[in-house]
Length: 107
Image 1: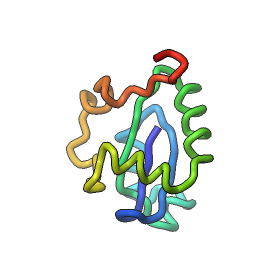
Image 2: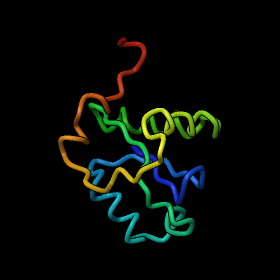
Image 3: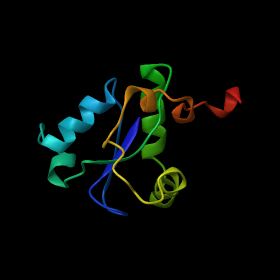
Image 4: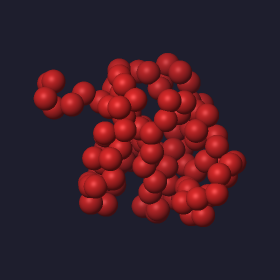
């Protein structure tokens, strides 16, 4: 699951994918007409990994219901400078355990 934006505190888009690097590249290329191309949301500012596609989908739906302040706090906590995490993104970073979402029921 990931969040892209057009600039700091700008328009946010939340999505999920099986191929983070490839999907963000598509956002940057404006490969598909839609929300992210319309609002130029192509800066990856936050992501987390899940064990299953269903887990990522459920978390995406949950996070989309959050109020904007909570979403901004999520980004600010791990990426206070709102850096584009796509630059230099590696498989090791994507699958680093610090990005793994663990539901509270399992903690």
